[in-house]
Each structure stands twice: as structure tokens, then as C-alpha cells.
Image 1 (cartoon, one colour):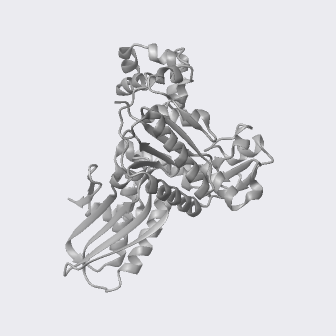
Image 2 (tube, rainbow, N blue to C red):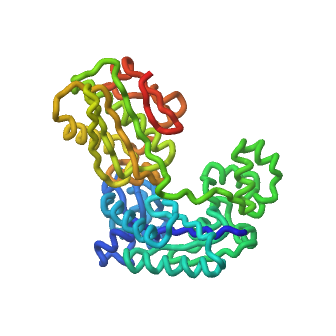
Image 3 (cartoon, rainbow, N blue to C red):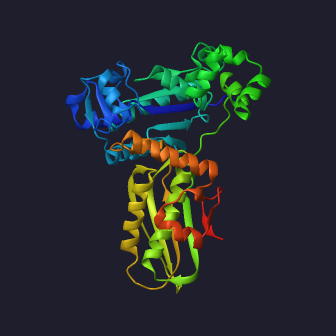
Length: 399
């Protein structure tokens, strides 16, 4: 039986939220991002895109291309609130769905009797979301996540597109190779140099050649070009958290050392969060006293994966939590409510240099190991307390 996979993607989400707050901005070129000339574009309206503006572009260049654009600093708290609102609306209508990012969702409607019936239900859900959230959202539906996502992107904004079963190749064939998810600038440039510009041409390439050129990703490229994608819709409630814990050999009351250890732990899990291209909106700190009493405190925050935001949040939680001034045997940090998303969408006030610094730091950690680049304040801690990230459950334990 063919699957019925629905893809829902909010149209210019950050821009739409700002226009909901300020209706006078509708129809005008709008850029969301760092307001200084050294800032970057986090999102832009379709009107601004007509001038060549796109996300991650330096703000000074965006304003050269579209000098009449209105620039607004990002309000991640408002975006997170609206993301949760959309999530609740979908959850009320669908028992199982995947929250792929802050503004993107998948629903497996394969249990419905007729394909058209599933699409009709999806259209009604889209209208419900628009009605209750007052935000524009696009819909794509096909037999798998890949084709549904491409369909949504190809016909945005205000898309309601059904790709019937068996027509996946016909739909994908004429498209440029970069329209396929996970084919970035470097891969598309390499393919263009080989004369491969469309998905139909990529589809005709021998599998062995693609594997020799791209390694294991070559097989993935070939499957995508064929419109093949067996990846399941991962239920939102099943997405795991990332947690860290450190148990001390000797109980301690040294607050300075405890905070240094928390910094080291947060840096490790924040890096892991970005490696998985995820964001968190809930932070929990746990402490266990020498008498084994355990206390936790958590807070909901705007979606982020940034060190400086998570560090500040964890330190504030620890200050509120540690009030008994007793010996501590364990500290822990937990990041939950995870969604897929880019690290840089949080950095509305950061400069291009700040973003490049994060990327450079993560590159070094990825290549040489997470412990090869640390803050000076945690240098002594990392010498005395080595931690290892378990990539299966995210836990950090003392060796």
C-alpha cells in the first residue's frame, strides 16, 4: 500500500509573525536579522527575495540589493510561542506527527482509506491552522517525505499540492539538482561541473560512478533522484532529549568548581545539539546532595543551540536551585523539546563574524575532538574531570 505523507511548512515564518504583530508591514519588503551593518539576514519576505535577498546573507549586502526594506531584529520568544501554537493545533487533529523544525511538520496519513480523502483532510487541516494561528502555511503530499517536501518548496507560498503515487519521477525530473534536500552549494556545483543540472540527468548517472565520486552519499543521491525515500515519520513525542551528568569522587561544596563543571558540560551538549542540527526549548538542571536528596529545576526558553544562551540559562537555574548549601555528589543538565533547526537562526543580533566563530569552533571540535577546544575557565576542570559523550543516549559520565 502506498504511503500518504503530508508536509506542512510555514511561509516565511519569522516574517509572518512580525506581520501579524504589525499588519502595516504586509506587502512591504521585510528583513529579519541583525540590525547592524555587520549583522546577517535570518529571514526575509518574498518581496525582499525578488531583489536577491536570502537568509544568512550579510545585512549590508541585503540592504544594497533592497535599500527600501524594513529591518527588524528577531523575536525568538514570539517565534517559539507561535511554533508551539501550531504544534498544538496539529496535535489536536493528528495522533502522530513529526516536528521537523520550528516551522515544519510531517504527518503520516497512510491509515486513511483513500488517497484523495487524505489530501482533502490535509487541506482542511491547513485551513484550520491558518484560521486559528493567522499565519500562512503551505502543504505538499505524496508517497514519501522527500517528494512532499520538494512539492511544498516548489509551489510556496500558499501551496496545496498533491503529487499522485507513480508520478514522482515526472515531478522531480525537470527540477534543478539543488532542489533536492541535502544537495548544497558544493555538491550542486560539483554536479554542474559534470554537466548534471537536472534531477532527470542525475537519475541517469551510474550508481557506481556516484558512489566513487561522493562515497556513501552517492547511493543516497541516486535514490533521491529516483524519488525513493523510505524514512519514517518520527512521532514528535518520541524525540529524545540530550542529558549530561557528572558524579564526583568526593562530595563538594565548591561553588566555583561546580559552575566551571556546568560550563564544560553545557559546551559539550550544545556542540552535540548543533552536530545533530537541533534546537532546544527546555533546559533542566539537576543536583543530588550527599544524602541522595535530588532536586531539579527547569525553564522553557526560545528555541536555541547557542552556547552563550544555554550557559546563562543553566547558571541562573543552578543559582535558584542550590539553596541548601550542602555537599553535592552529582550535577546534571538536560536539554529537551528538541526540534531540527539551524544554529544561526537564533543569532539575530550576532554579527557575521560571531556566526563564523561558532562554525569555526564546531569545525575544530568535529575534526579534532570536543575536548580540543575549551574555555580557559574550564581548563582545570577538564584536566581533573574528563567526560565522555555517549552518542546513543546523550549522557555524559565521569571516567
